[in-house]
Image (cartoon, rainbow, N blue to C red; front, side, top):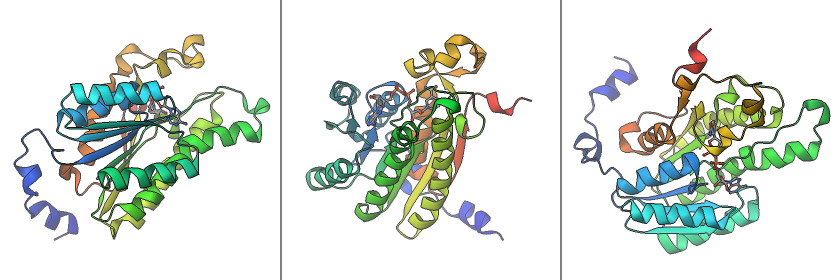
Length: 266
Ligand SMILES: NC(=O)c1ccc[n+]([C@@H]2O[C@H](COP(=O)([O-])OP(=O)(O)OC[C@H]3O[C@@H](n4cnc5c(N)ncnc54)[C@H](O)[C@@H]3O)[C@@H](O)[C@H]2O)c1
């Protein structure tokens, strides 16, 4: 019998097997960029399922609207703070503050991301570092600190992109950062295993957010998108909430494409 079969034969934990639809009662979820787009949908999903939600965003108005949406959706409590995820020292102190005031979150969603548009011929090293700091190293610092703080295990979800697999012109740093995030996810899943921390990545396709509609490649037609391949933020939030839950207890190191089948077509 394979390990997988043995696992499949074991009973699911009570919380998953007798799911009440509120998988996050009594749990704290931390989400970056949780007041807009995909992050906001995930914030609302977690809140509806009972989670206390902590929203970090470099724009305080976005962080606050995420926390407001969480309270409206039924979160027992919500907290928001301004935080640039590319600022290592600020991330470390914000996480220590959260641990002191709320206890360690059991789920961390590395969702905040940034995208710039420039051909390789014009890119500087500073341009690269600006994107890598947010889209790759931000996630790394959260993972490292989570490994120190999550004493009772947990789940980390990295929001990557289908740009990790296929891409368009003029977004080389973004595509490279998202591809590296998948590698980081695999490394972290191995090193997190003995700590009881699962680490997975979600790769959204085209999702109906300002990030998509204001994308110059989409506007100019350089990136052609069939509207049937445009998903909603809730489509990604559902997968994020699954990965954070006990139902996903055997999902670790995975990179899950959620793109309506866009990449599957020749
Ligand atoms: N929208 C899409 O079609 C799509 C597709 C694939 C992947 N993604 C990824 O999904 C994630 C969310 O994207 P979205 O479309 O919801 O974007 P969005 O622009 O709607 O929201 C992103 C949020 O992150 C915040 N943010 C940006 N830089 C930050 C920083 N340095 N520190 C803290 N907060 C910061 C923004 O203020 C904003 O609130 C990103 O990682 C993005 O790369 C989006």
